[in-house]
Length: 465
Image (cartoon, rainbow, N blue to C red):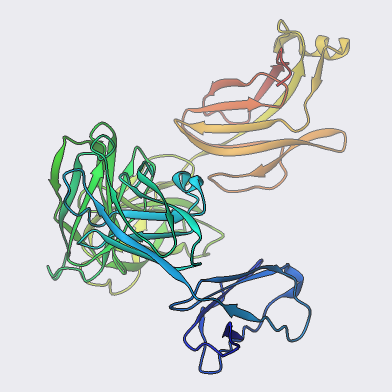
């Protein structure tokens, strides 16, 4: 039950429950009697926490409460609350609109440990509620949405008004503005988000309606702008360094389609393993997924996030090999299954044996002699990776089984064959990477050869790492 300090129930209070090992429970709003009820809680999963807040009151927490089977009653008493409100000004004194403002208990708010965050409106105004009267907080505005660079840090009392001004040094000069519309209808989207990534570090994004404007980004860093909207396929502007000033992007977003593909080999058999990529009209990779024989015995694959417009579909064998490209148009939903052909792959078996030594002069050619002398020994727990360019094809761990050593297959890409003395690799040049804790890593090229065998000797690291 939620009530005030006089014992009267509070209607319209928000009550939120946090429980370990379970999805978030739906928020509840208290009726006239101030009660709320959460059912289906697994009491064995651990303690729960509860948050309650209502207009005009300070928020209330019950943390790490241990429940018992049956009904558990939590008494929530809300005390009168206070707020901090004010405005954020740009260096030239104009309102800093759509600027994040954070509030927290201490200076750690500058490193992202905030309790509440709000975005300023078009007049640069913000408001924080549910605070305890007279309590001290640290408040700041941030000029970089991705790096949380603080500007205008202030210590404030709950119940006060404050003006924050961004300083000219921290306030960066790159701004993005424009419109976002549906690609087929040409109408402005009622709701969308724009997120700016600073050198691959993402930031938070407000929701816009029809038009957008974001400012305060560095002119000396690589920026990537990503546009997204409910029911549509995400699109982005490639990362680059921008000159100071306004940069306009009027973006068209395609609706997202769900398409069923059938992947087959040239002799019309289901593809046992294939990788599918979808490129939008700008050549941007908007969807990447994979199918193996475990997904569907007919080679069927359902893919979401296909743009409702012209696009290019690329398919290639799961572990490397030639790819095929299909130019398709999904402006209208497809009438049925879309059939794509995958190039066949020739596979080769390769066995790998891994040994360790403390002697850097040990060679594979003298392996029997080294083993007899005890200067070379088999390694248990070594990892063997097969790489194609910068992408890992397989990862295996060599483990002891009986009197020998076998590979326990764990595929990053490709069919898992279970315990085996080797690995199937596609008929393309690859790179073998072998390492084990306490030994120096070895990399060597491998060529497609049938029933080939590779023996690797790892030398112990001088520092033992």
